[in-house]
Length: 119
Image (cartoon, rainbow, N blue to C red; front, side, top):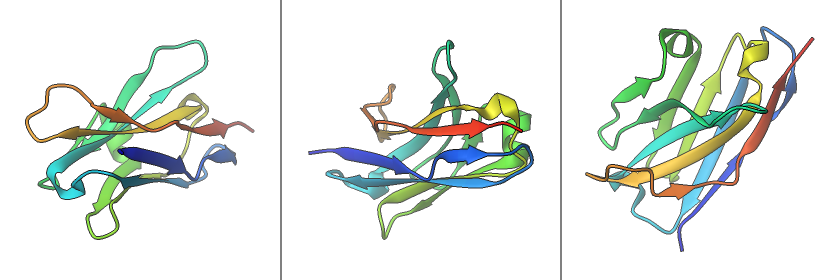
């Protein structure tokens, strides 16, 4: 059974840093691309970034790539989202997702972890 479980969310102030972790089980982690999406209150879910099975990273915007880092640990089957210089607009529920090699859509999702950035 595929499971993705996010952790590390919380309430922080603008300029703070936070690292989200997604622990996974039930699939061959090294074969999968791993991604992060987020959904702000009242908005649609949006892509943040992902890391391919070959460790290539792609981010949604230059603002995200300047402040966030997606990394994977194949030995521990985990993917992290390191976020720095957080802004109020980063407030959202963050979701971890996975897709098999060659898949066109994200197949598996976690339940999300909430990040709130406010002064």
